[in-house]
Image 1: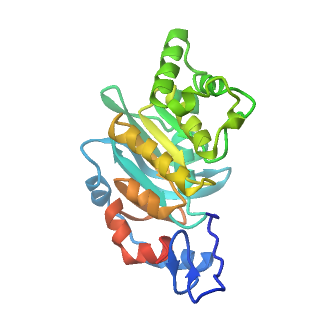
Image 2 (image 1 turned 90 degrees about the vertical axis):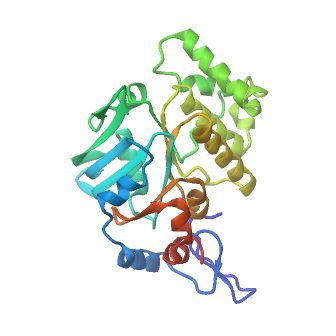
Image 3 (image 1 turned 120 degrees about the vertical axis):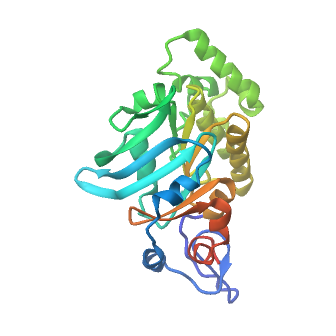
Length: 296
């Protein structure tokens, strides 16, 4: 599915809208941005905290962040509980990936804080390096770009995910656990990664992030570039990691319908601000969200 492809079906009166589904009228990206801004409402901290099961496991507090001198996120707040999933949707340029980048340490933080539950208390991780966040806070980032090394074997790709581990036995145990869990990778462990299908490459990217045994997965556009059958496979894998292994998942997803169907909590971002927040189910039923982001 082309990202934000607003092409017109000349064979019928029906036109394709933003993301999946069919609508009677084409909605341009500019119109989506403009109408989304009009719908934006201030989301209270009570609303944000009320969507969390138990104690927040990860908190973003009044964050202003961006790149260089450019501020992208404005007074942004986020909370998610341990073992919960949260999906961020919104127009292009809304700041969705910037949230993930900020949590993992890829942006400049002008003000605000990011806290994670480490050990038995919340600790600020805003100024930690990405390596520290991975090793100490258990936060792993799964990039949206194709990050598989095609000429390296599947096993060698997994070993790249263990670069912060010092104990060889622990590394081998983690990798063998992954092979036992995912037979698709096990049977190709000695094959170059280029032989994998698109879905299997995404599985390898997810698995490489699991080698460090993180508690929190930051997943950027897991469905991008994949055929529908592989999209379903990837979301089944993520569902298993959340439901059966207790992983906390923060996701940005271009396929808004798929992302909201998957996640416990849904956020709508507009121009670097949190415009709407609710359960994934309720946002799916919201007519304005449906019209602007779900294709009718």
